[in-house]
Each structure stands twice: as structure tokens, then as C-alpha cells.
Length: 272
Image 1 (tube, rainbow, N blue to C red):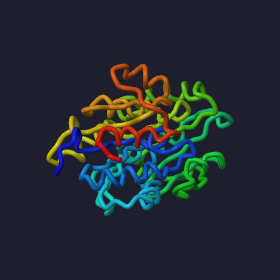
Image 2: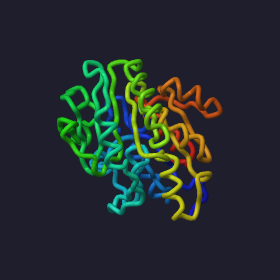
Image 3: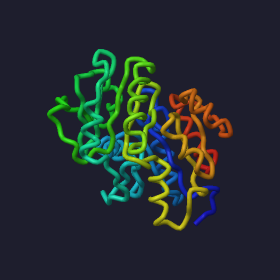
Image 4: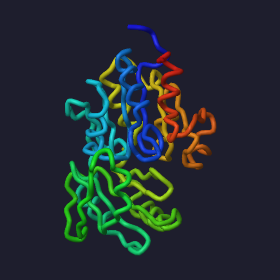
């Protein structure tokens, strides 16, 4: 096989690999197909549910890829083989789903197995899932269950709406969970030690290369450990300002609306 500077690319989706309409562009599709032909591994690492990624992958003509989903709570390949699975304990998940917060400012969601649950209808969330059609079911979390909970996440109207929730969770469950922000208005809660970086390490433990042979891209605080832990991490120009502050040593590239990840991949791997 031709020698390249990296054995794998690992990319976040929203704000990174996907365009400003939260869809995968034709230039990016063509780039990933050509990259796969060169024998470079393709891994997508996202806060999304795995069910949400499968229709996106169907647009790309590649046979092998890894999906790291729910911020690392799960990973599987395109054939459906489960590589990583780390659920919140059922009782803990239920407790977190039912904490007290301002329902006029915040909504609560969960990814459980193949499903997405939410406490109220929020039609504007549909724009994030045009490619996949993945959609939520409205439930009463006080009457819900905690089975197969990959993450519980809170979406606020403003970033400051999430501050008291984050503080409460730290005070009461801080030693039992992992918390991160996928956007400034979305606080995500997973089981202890869950992260994109840890899931990537688990996936690579079965391969003949390690994190230093990976090139990664991201735009959110849920990408910090992954971008810092690989051979080269790239921050999007449109990234959360907190990510740029957290990773000042990393290169900042173009913006997702211009499909900058695909352009960077082409330049790095000599794809024309």
C-alpha cells in the first residue's frame, strides 16, 4: 500500500464534515470514496445516534468505515458489528432524565438503543436530520425507562440556561458520569469515562496502528480529547470559541460550509 502520513481520518459531523445544512456534500462524498480507495480508514465520531449515521453512509460508496456515536458510548462498523458499548446504569439514567430544570428554557432528550426520546416537541431540531430522517418520540420521562441509555442531553434556549443543570450534575453525579458540550447550547451526559477519544482507543486496540497515526477534525468541546490525542488534530474555523481556547496548539482550518475537511484531506493525501 502507498505510504501516507496517516492511516486513518477521524471526523466529527455537525459543524465539521457536514455542510451548513447538516448534510454531506458531493465534494465530501467524492473525497471519502477516493480516500477509501487508497486504503485509508474512515471513522466518523459524533454525538449523534448510530441510527442517524446509516442513511448518511448510504450516500457514500465505501465498504469499510467505523461509526463512533453518542460521544463514544457506542462504536460499530458498517456491517453492524458492535465494537464499543457503554451505557449509563438504568437508575442513574432515569435520575438524570428527571432532574429539576426550567422547562420553558430547556428540553431533555435521551438516546437509548436505536431511539431518540424528548420531553416536548421541538420542530426546529428536524433541520439537523434532513439526511437521515431520524426523529424523536415525545415521552413523559417520569414514566419512562432507563434501558440502553447511551446519553441524556439538555438543549437550552441560551448557553446560560444550562449552567445550573451542569452545576447540579457535577455536584450530585460528578464521579459517575462524563459531561461535555456538543454545541454551546447542548449539554450531554454519558457514563463515566465515555469520550470520543476513549472509544477511538478501544477501536484501535484491534488494529496495527495507534492514535498517533490518525488525523482528526472537530468543532465542539466534545472533540477536545480526540483532537488532542491523535497524531494531528484540526479545529474548524467555525468551531466553538471554547474549543479554540482549549486547543491553542492545533491548526485552525476552513469552515464546514465550504467543505474544508474534504479540501484538507485532498491536500494531505494527494487526492485530485
